[in-house]
Length: 106
Image 1: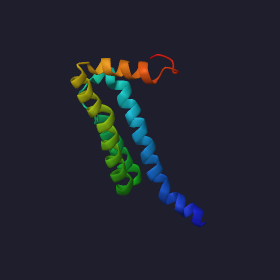
Image 2: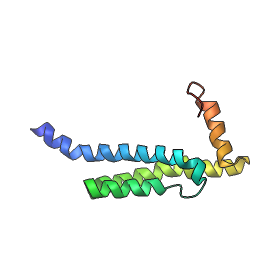
Image 3: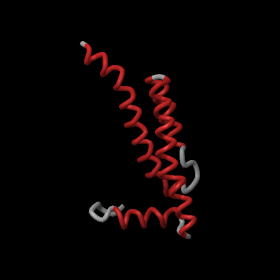
Image 4: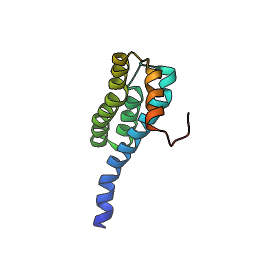
């Protein structure tokens, strides 16, 4: 009974982490279409969904985590691409080639 109560309190936070991961994957998939525009757009949607279903606490966690993940993956990467003289697509091709050698090419 106590474990069930603890899981009810922890599960929404775990779900918010999973949804932020899904939002990051969705944004990475939309990268060729969106380019540098709306780097945090999918994270806004994830925070809204989490807030609607699980409340304020998990939504605040999702907002903080989504900002950190989105900033690191999409805005810092774009600034790095600008600094190196690559376009955003060139940076992603470079990262896939160097760091995903064992994975199938996309």
